[in-house]
Length: 215
Image (cartoon, rainbow, N blue to C red; front, side, top):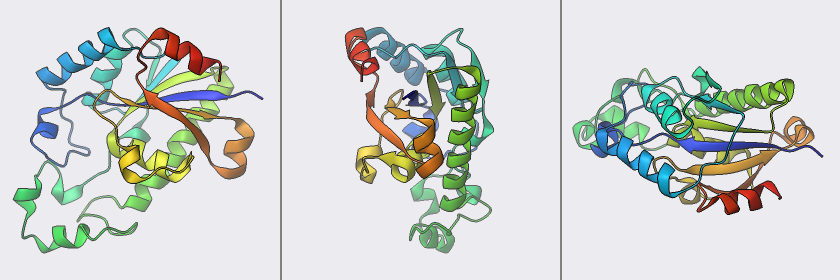
């Protein structure tokens, strides 16, 4: 049985992240500290070799992809962009405190979007569409291992909705420049829309990566 491996990697840190802002479609670049952190991780840890990199079109992701996989065959995929926070974009929780619309949104729910923003259900639907495109593209091009550089919210939704074994919300969180390795076979995906969660990224060493390749 042929398995396809996807390495889901969160972008590096931005100034907006440090300030606790809701940055969805706001196109902010990596901060100087974020760039340094990525280079440090790339130097000390091991990111698996891949045949192609799929990335969100937002700067923080394309910059991360260039640092971690410089010169790699890369394709931007709009479906991998972060959630659109609408009227809450680029604002902090303190700035939104007291706004009735913000209080209502914090109650959660799949069909409770921020004003002029995107609902959780909409995000999950495009996560599925993005995975479907990537897996189909891998099969068409004959690739077996790729990287997907995207956003924390997108990775969490992918893992929580389509990953096995099922993880709790806190288990789906990942730091900047970190993520998860997943594996899927065509029959499993087409039959149940699910993939297997293999573990966290990056690896401690090349040997850890080789061990993963043998699984």
